[in-house]
Image 1 (cartoon, rainbow, N blue to C red):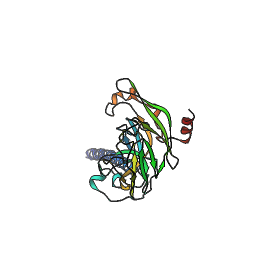
Image 2 (cartoon, rainbow, N blue to C red; image 1 turned 90 degrees about the horizontal axis):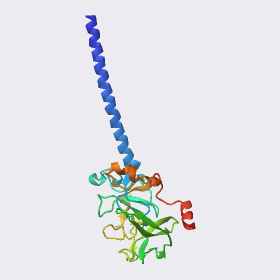
Image 3 (cartoon, rainbow, N blue to C red; image 1 turned 90 degrees about the vertical axis):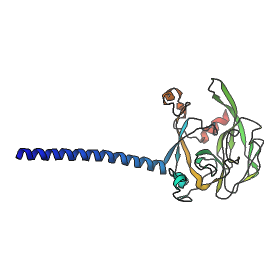
Image 4 (spheres, rainbow, N blue to C red; image 1 turned 135 degrees about the vertical axis):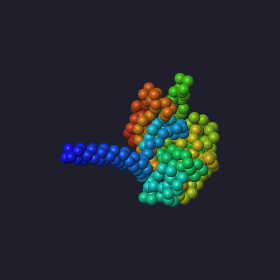
Length: 270
């Protein structure tokens, strides 16, 4: 009898230990998922560059991290926020600075993420004349530098005129001019409404941005976060993972999309 009782106790202990181990494993995975969702919702979010509107700053195939807390949080900062409308406005709000590269959702297409450069602040007057940017009636200076050269799918190369543009706050960045008579090289004067922002792509002739009625001004609430770092870059399609190793652009890994002062000095000296 004692032997049978001992065996029953051992079996119960083994069963309890197995259930406990199974529970702990699932608990670990659930915690990991919660942490991942929280990290993506409130800290950093990955973003894939799908178009060439920000060339040569950001290229198709760049994977970047966007800091979600740069400007505080709105419903657009949180996954499925547009669908569930968690709350209105922004909490812990911080105003963006001119020249920052920002992910946002335009009011005309609130279900799509866009990434552009912030050009106009509330109250600014923005206009393009003959391919030159004017902010509040003053020409934004730019100097021509080396062409942007890219390899096309057919093996040929394409050269596009590239400039260094200096915004009123001193931030310097690249712009491309693919067409001297482009669609948005001459525009009306835009006055940015209070609580809104004016965005433009660095690839000025190939960017749907605030110069078009399709996108327009962007409310502060619609900002998602600031582009912080290019983590990985590849020339192939995102789903062609078997081609990643042969098409990586390793020189772009973990680089800042914004030019540093030292980089702009070196570019000007060339």
